[in-house]
Length: 391
Image 1: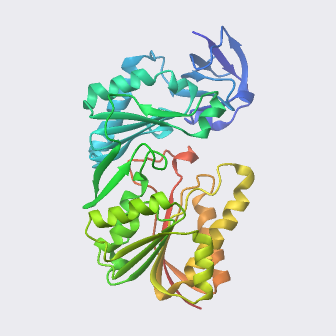
Image 2: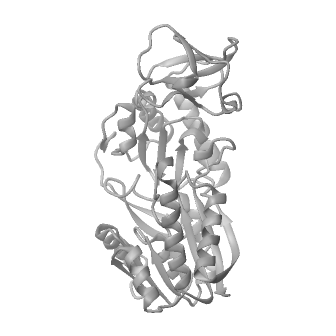
Image 3: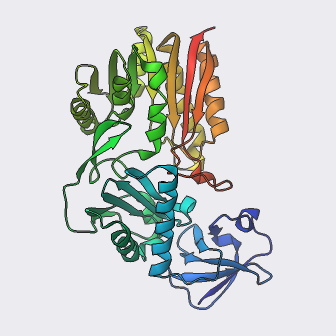
């Protein structure tokens, strides 16, 4: 097996368990290097680090799969996925869940979402792509699924020299899958929906709005397929109006409302949230609860400041639309924006909006997306509810 030796001066994160090794941290390589192959990694003093896959075309040259000298083979992936499933079962996520969350499940580059008996896979790096057949085989062994689909139509694969693609990894099936979440029904389009078709990471946070929406007039922006809004209706909201720029998402949101019998309470329209929030601020519209769940505003460190400006803008506008003593529900899924920076941004928005805010709850993603301390990208979702009042 090819051996890789690291430089004397490397980041402490590697010794502390982080699985990423950058190209500039490698001193020497002994043996042939085939992109995506498994290599043994050693510190400068020849003490073993572990084994992982290498791709020198990527900025992250090596991603470690294990700190042991164990064989990386089909059995390895079968056992890792079994362990991931056992963890979800222990913490109560069985019907719909993120079964494998990349680095947080010690399988960097791999995402698997479970929707009932259907599975969606993303193999986001060359090294994990090479084991896709073994991963599919493991899912078939553990679950005997009704269907497996790959959503590898993501630009990050191109950084690994991979093409974007999507399609069946099992016999074809109807890719519109009905799921139940918190007692509500949602149709998931795993072929054409965003990411893997549905945002499982907010499933616990959607329950958190129950105390504040009863009898409320609710506005939701960046609604996607209406999950927060339909929860609000189910928890007793008087009226719910949701907006999203995607006509396809809005169409599905209205269908989801009807699926739950809330079509007289929930209404969704396609419009640009930034423009709409500005317009309604000028018109002095007011709601008891305003909910904001925008997409990631940046995926590069160079544009973090621009993302922060965007978050401040929408939250400032959102706060101005909240009745005195009402609530703002707001999120950020941009992993490059830390929890501290997010809260600072909300505080700045409140100052500029001349509003007082009082924190009700501050949470991360659902526990089927576990957080590993020291691996920042596993702690990516920020979810906040604040009471908003006049200065």
